[in-house]
Image 1 (cartoon, rainbow, N blue to C red):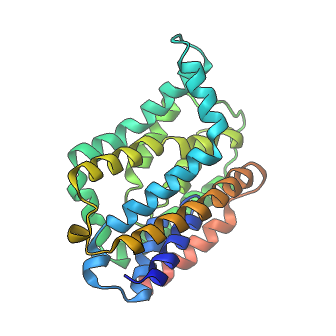
Image 2: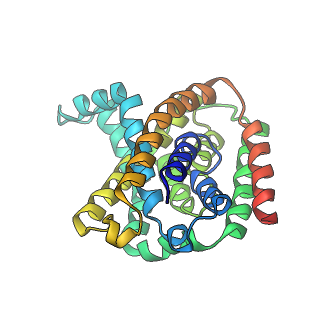
Amino acid sequence: MSLIESFLLGLLQGITEFLPVSSSGHLALGKHLLGLDPAIVDSPTFEIIVHIATSLSIVVVLQKDLRQLLKGAAQLRWNNETRYLGKIVVAMIPIAIVGVFFKDQAEALFTAGLLLVGIMLLVTSLLLLLTHFYKAKNPHPIRFVDAAVIGLLQAVAILPGLSRSGTTIATSLLLGNPKSEAAKFSFLIVLVPILGEAFLGIVKGEFAPSVTGIGVAPLLVGFCTAFVVGCAACKFMIALVQRTSLIWFAVYCAIVGTLSLVL
């Protein structure tokens, strides 16, 4: 993988991670269009690295919210902050189960090809379309049962092409949660799973060039690009969900999904 290729893929990850269009699907499509070595295409290493970068973007953008949550948790009593953290934990349980017991099967999905990506992008399009036509009559804050359902759909969204942010945000809106909460909750519940997986990967030496077949420089370029662009995209998406419909992203996913099927 060249530095230009890693830059382009990092740029793609940074833009699409927070937009409801599936970053994994776009990375698979990007690798195909760039004609990368099959060994690199089949390896999930680059995806993991750039996902770590965009997760750190969340920490930067939502640092005020995270500080408030940690400050409340430090009081060691049941309050608004600990209640919210409890909902985050509930939402993370399904993806944690997948990560612990089905890691190999999950990583194998990244080699499934563009057919699966195309189908899942069309599913993403359908979910986003539903949020345009269905409006909850009595919006309510995210409840524990809502967190469990959102978490379950997040676990399903490991499928390449099924947008994680699109799936969780759409699910939250369809459950009747306010727009002001949907995007932030979606971004916060992915932090621990991705950073936890990264830590385990570093401990096991899974990111060494001899293992991945990708040099340190391309990984670093992809990481830095995804991080910087991800900060801007995260801010943009939080503001966008609060003030507009997601229908244009539904149209976009339908077009890209169709392109993937054709390819």
